Image (tube, rainbow, N blue to C red; front, side, top):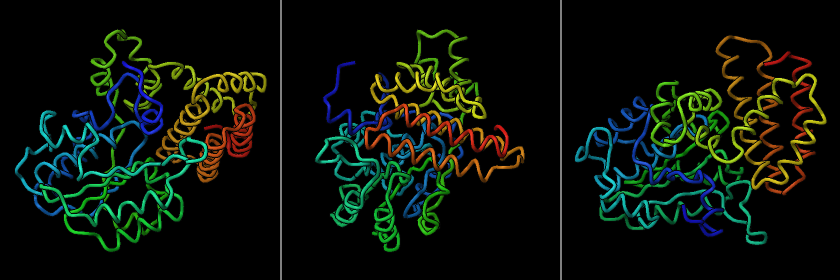
Length: 352
């Protein structure tokens, strides 16, 4: 794959090197229930003003959002298109979306810090305010405008309040698609004004079906190991398959498993490695928080005790890594801080 320019790399932090971006992805695996619900509402002519698309990272939230956007911009809220909301790649609206040139689609993400040129740690109110101007414009030929907020989790308080005002007075023929890894942490008033589309993790067979054509040089045993590590997330699996992803995921699991008595020398060595890697701390933080969230979900399903404290630890870890990434802090101290948080919780409530 040709090397992309720096601005594009910063803007497309959700692109996994060597694989299609969600807006370039036309297949959606394992999310038939959510897709069918969206299709019934859209093709029935009465879609909601906003959908909150929730689920763990990498399971298809953005892919579903772009699928909905393509259909609305090509056919409007009508049954003119197929029941699965498929729009061919050679459709003019689909091609403009792939080229990021469709006037009826706006994607809201974290912006760039003008002083440092780096990605900001949160979505600012200025980014969200773009929605008002976008929805106020004359709609395109299809009569619809669609905005994707990727992700709503990144909004700061002012941005969330600005979004809420828009939801209180929705414009006609407009669709707002909010993507969220953890919808329960959004403002209750935002959640109440959106219809939910909850996506699920894929089972092992579905994962293998998705990964086989994308990783043709990987044998069945290697794919099976990848499936075990990725927790039902194709995005996580593809990330693991590139660079040092698999090793970082294993380090994250090891940190949680050894939370009661962490290996300080190993943690310092890990910090040194993350310092040398491009986006190493950010990747490790994502693996660690998702691994912890997955274990919390399993424990909740089994009815285990001490969940409230582990949920607080998860929130604290997310804050620690977000701050360290945005400020370019030294990875060793960040890893040690994370280990202390996990150790304190493990000593009180027991291991996950």
